[in-house]
Image 1: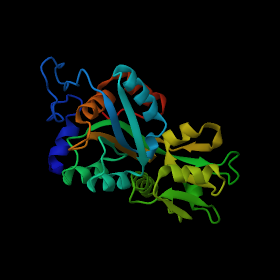
Image 2: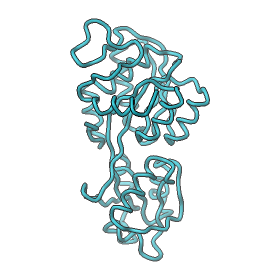
Image 3: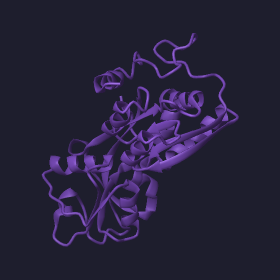
Image 4: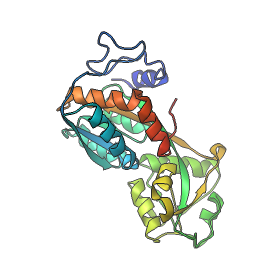
Length: 265
């Protein structure tokens, strides 16, 4: 599937006039919304970005209540690594990444069906409790002696961090480059660094285990999360049901808001 087709699908996501996922569009579907299977069962294996670690199990519990007889299993990790696994033939049903460009790699490899955007995230600065380095903004991260952890630019959180720093003309020399945003958060919580740039949802999930500084919207960067069924999924119908549930269920969007995610449309 070409990148242009994926871009078209995402640009029309609110109207959902895109080519539906495999098997969608059955009679009786609400106008503009692909029909989800009425009855599914079995295990759904979902590979999801690590920043979804807290919210996806909550969504899965609601999904399994709606579809008795289903079981959702998760494989959380850095988005590029998840795509590599799927492109190598890992037996996965659903892929949810933390950025659109990362998902494109699976689309262009012919490994996933047309994705749907379902959430958006932005960046924040996390510090150990008490903020011993006195961080008050992005510019403080460039001070001599301040130890900063960020994600490697190859992963979505790293690309967003790069964009934030560039937008604010801040040069940071990180002491570590992580391949998973939760590893950055872990460094902060362990008091191994003075600060780390993570998603706003990670700060919310950490609660009192970190102190944080908000980055104003005009100075921030965002990333959109897409979700898709994997072509040749072991449980294709249940996979489609899960994707439709995440994208189109009002209560799911409410759960995502509660965990700090924003609407992608």
